[in-house]
Length: 203
Image 1: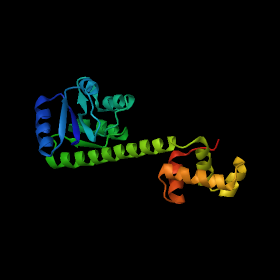
Image 2 (image 1 turned 60 degrees about the vertical axis):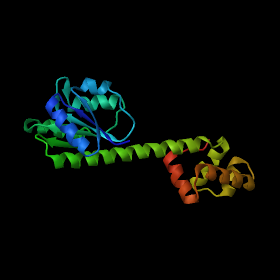
Image 3 (image 1 turned 90 degrees about the horizontal axis):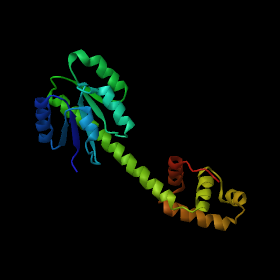
Image 4 (image 1 turned 90 degrees about the vertical axis):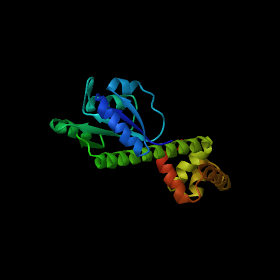
């Protein structure tokens, strides 16, 4: 799926010009004349960013960012601004926008900003996928395996874990091996890193 760039601007000619330029760079685009039409549009899963004019008929770039945050739309935002709106654009960046471009937008500046924003969004999606995969692996552990994982990765020896859980050391080794296999951890160090990301607590 090629990256999708949302263009939010009430200037029809500018939207068409940006669409042509971005599609020449092998990006897909969706164009919106207002914040409301953007918020109502379907947003396919995949990397991309939002290119938005700082001033729109139904609000500004800050309003858009606030609504995106409320609805869990996490794609990076690039603000397009006229010279008189630079102060507002700076506030938008402090609120989370990744860049702002001054109109008339230079092709190279647009290209650089979009490439950086799409790259950031791809990293976000990768992190989400890794986190989901890790949660799914952890969900496969039995309650006892979770206890063993929490105690071993906190630094306790098998013998100490056995004493705390009132089990034999041999049983702890079996649970430990099974838990590591389910978590796809090849070494104790890797298992500890995974445990830090999940932060399970002993019961």
